[in-house]
Image (tube, rainbow, N blue to C red; front, top):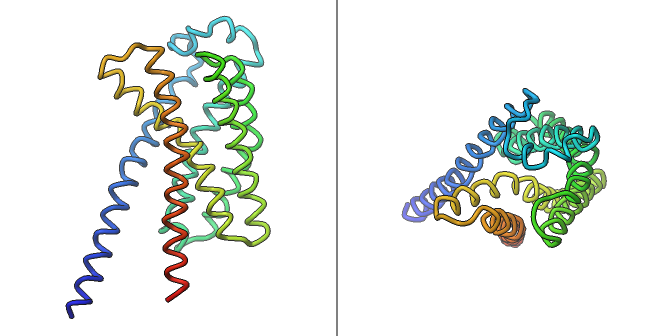
Length: 224
């Protein structure tokens, strides 16, 4: 009886911890998607566009920008479905469809446009290099995720997609850090650079921690 109570308590704590993680992730993800919508009024009265007014006079950069933000919003939305255990258990068809959408959008739209725009990113050479790395790593991890699922290697697929999702979520975590540092009174450029680096490195470390935790649980369940 005592053991049953302990197991029930452990499960309750685990569910609460998962909710504590996924609730803010979902809220901030949906907020980012919502904040993306006004750009499709195609008005030029946005700070991001005004700062790069010369670049936006070029039709190719202009097209890349709108494709990239649409792709980013779509990736963030479909990724929420991908990592939903409820959806995976109830409907694998939805998981497959949303996965195909995510992979296609990343490989053909999100990562390529992100790579092109990285050459014109704000900040120093190092910030532009970081954007290039993000686009490349996002592409590679997603491509490997596609490759591994075709080989029926479920574990490797999960690992790759966790890393891919971590890159997609930099769009969310960057804004969270940016708001936080703004409230702390940081200078705009320093805030931008610090938020960017913490977001990318932090997301990558968090992804590796999640992979490590899940590998421990898998080994433990396999051993028992």
